[in-house]
Length: 300
Image 1 (cartoon, rainbow, N blue to C red):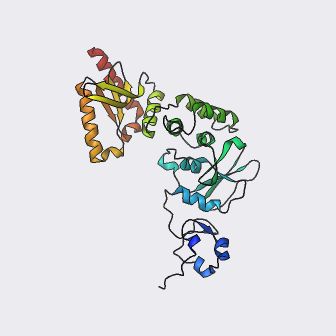
Image 2 (tube, rainbow, N blue to C red):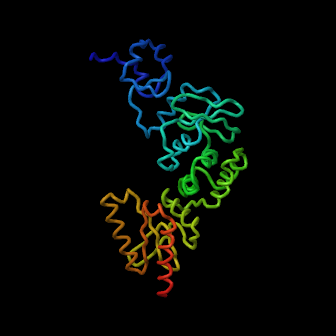
Image 3 (tube, helix red, strand yellow):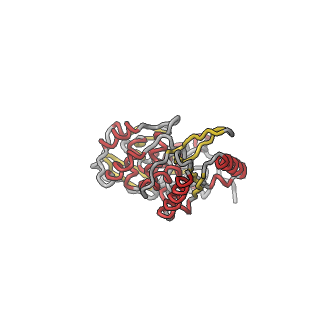
């Protein structure tokens, strides 16, 4: 097969519209070449878009959006790097328009008509998007409580906050949605800036939902062997609950965790290790932790 004619330099990187390409003298035949990605009607890209490259996908759609449109919901959350459950990370781009305008309908998109004010919108990567606070509010119609709290914990996380609990509460007062309001009210008091990972947040909220209280997130335990941080700690009982995610499969991480857990247990701590399978039956997990706590209190 004959090599295609090179594109103008300005079109080699990033999405471009068919109209822009024709303005640069690119032929219709060249624009039909199978080597060009077609993420949306009238949009081309000189290289394949990876499924997790939400920025490039959003930029491609932005080329054909009306001036008052904005990225929202799951897409805005991904742009703000909020953690989302895998089922929510679909390739479709969520795009909103101010109500009462009719929601956009185009292949590869999910349209929304939203009541928004200027305080709900900002610029990110050169595109109009809902603010972190408004994005979190909109996610209440999509996510379960533990996942919504995990997304909120990401926003208020100490050291790298994108929002505060106060600014999120202000956004809630402006948010016109009724479907998600009860869940927002339930989630807001559960946000914790000390959370350090999404699954730690999910675990924390799950344990609370099943009536297990009395623990603190990211407790720093000081022993003669050094400082050790545990995901959730029942300090008085010296019981730690640790979530072991897939990243722990890394050999170096696995060895570090083994040493840390061994050192904690040598100083009288009991470590309950939890993985994703344990969250399939939260009731059993809570009963298991309660048994450990009863044993610890009985030993004292």
